[in-house]
Image 1 (tube, rainbow, N blue to C red):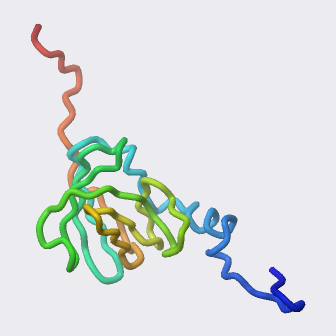
Image 2 (cartoon, one colour):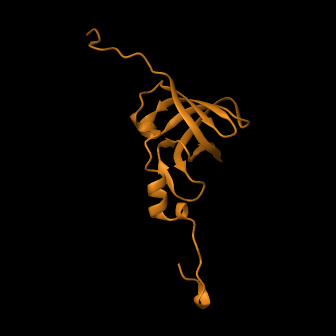
Image 3 (tube, rainbow, N blue to C red):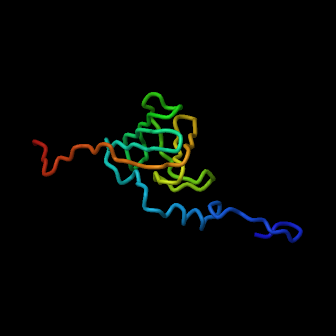
Length: 132
């Protein structure tokens, strides 16, 4: 990018739309919308560990506990994964990116995610038919 008076201004690749798309295109992550209610995730970041329980994946509603800010389970909205800027991969938790949450009026941005593990899947009732 060229700045004023003919000077070049370099923008870090991750701060451009194409750079973010490449960075966020990794396969080490999970879309919260793909998870059933009751699914429990353990998210290890550089500085903390969080336990997330999916309440409603389609609406990105979770219970989150862990780190310094969530000593008790707290209802939150998982905005998604970001590199710490204004671009967010909505509804995702991605290794190498930061997790962004809204808990009431607070916006929380974690340190970069190191791992995401599914701790618990809710029981599935295959072939279950409710009594009439």
